Image 1 (tube, rainbow, N blue to C red):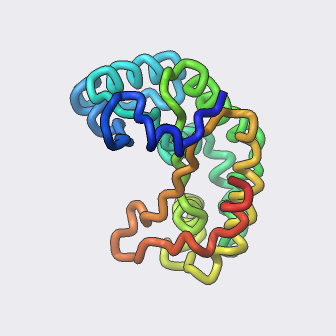
Image 2: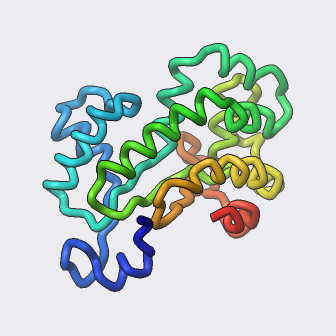
Image 3: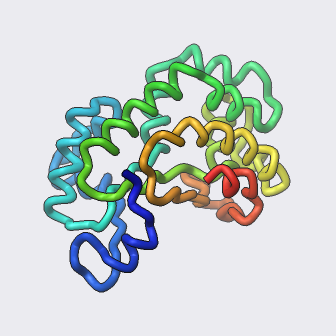
Length: 202
């Protein structure tokens, strides 16, 4: 059953007066894994690691960042990366990535296992459409991150919104859009107010 995020805020599971969301990945990698790679695609190992981190840090939600999971999936699939680079048009790499059934199903499996095994409400973190499109654009060898601008946001949001509907069966309490231009610190963070299709899907 989905726990409404307003309930998390008003009555944090930890008993705190203020609810706490923690991105545990860097902590878990350094402290629990001692620098070893995160097991993003090994659901059993990842859920175990998540439980350890949450036991130590006592957050009020389980945060699952889909960005690193997508990165791990792409690192294993050179044919998909090649297909993403078949056109240099802005948005093509993102559209190809999000339309790939195998990648979507594999990510859905990770999200589903985490949602079933966690005792806390689930927060699903997703890169904003411009941010994700820029990462896909660069990875595919189609150009620079700066090619993807705020002017592309609304069209890119349509692709992301369609993709997010795949998660409609998962009990997500909060969708957290990450508009930081990861790996492109020289670029401004994206304006998420332009993401109307994503907001409607949420």
